[in-house]
Length: 325
Ligand SMILES: NC(=O)c1ccc[n+]([C@@H]2O[C@H](COP(=O)([O-])OP(=O)(O)OC[C@H]3O[C@@H](n4cnc5c(N)ncnc54)[C@H](OP(=O)(O)O)[C@@H]3O)[C@@H](O)[C@H]2O)c1
Image 1: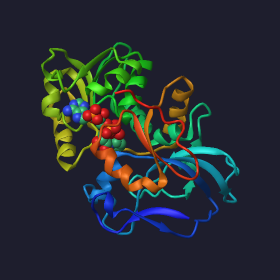
Image 2: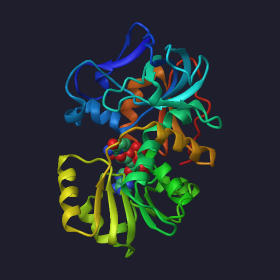
Image 3: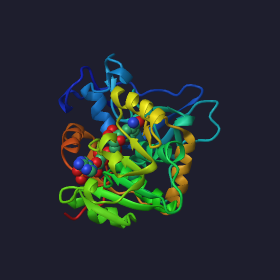
Image 4: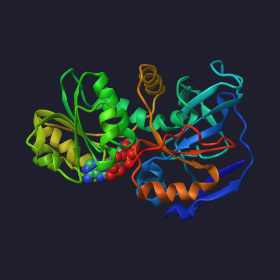
């Protein structure tokens, strides 16, 4: 079977398609024929070597975290799945390996694919959906009427965060670029701000919660528009942010939280409930498997509204929605 790996840190050119033996199930694992794999900022941050502390520097490394697919075989101890079941899930964030024709996953890393969404949409959901649910369950407390600012609202986490915050009754302001204004409104934002035209820091409004998804609004800036006991979330923390958040939380009423994704089956199940309630998942870009280098070259450089995925296998990319400019 074909898989994608790399033997040194670098840009998309380090990625290689190789032919390897199709993995076999062990007692407690499931063999999955992959249908689609999503593209996440974490993929290229790990591949560039920006996250060596967490990923380690041992090669070869594999790429791709979240996926959808069909169960091909099950280990003897697996009771919840059988051949032919449609599933979605995520592999170890720092080891990856989802971008392959077949993968082996543990039962705790997969859930039944929500019926009403396509394989592409299902692959797009696990990392950003789990991150959003982790933020709302463990980092911030969203009440009916909470004023929440989502800085970077038209990307992966933004798409889930806007919709779930609205389902919880929050008043949502999304900061997006011009091309993201329409979707941010469609997902339910009460207010949208175009960061290319207006500066949310100068808009004169204070927030109960700020979630920065752009990595461009540090706590030192966000604090100027936080209410007195409000919470700020940094989603791409390095050692500096982790230390700053620790110190801020000792000395300030305002809370500074950092996201460190800890995938959990319960997040996939909660995600499925939101999808059943009508949460929409926009996949605006789809690449065939053979175009993996193009995908990992273009997506980090270009704007993506919602998510981008790589489709594995013979399937055509029919369900990818086109975005009008
Ligand atoms: N810590 C963890 O465990 C963990 C887990 C998952 C994700 N993450 C991180 O969380 C972050 C968000 O993830 P994601 O998947 O949602 O990324 P994404 O899809 O790339 O979204 C980032 C958004 O930021 C927007 N943006 C860029 N510049 C901006 C600015 N100056 N002001 C406001 N918005 C701006 C982008 O909009 P335009 O494209 O329109 O410019 C884009 O919509 C990433 O850094 C990712 O690595 C961390």
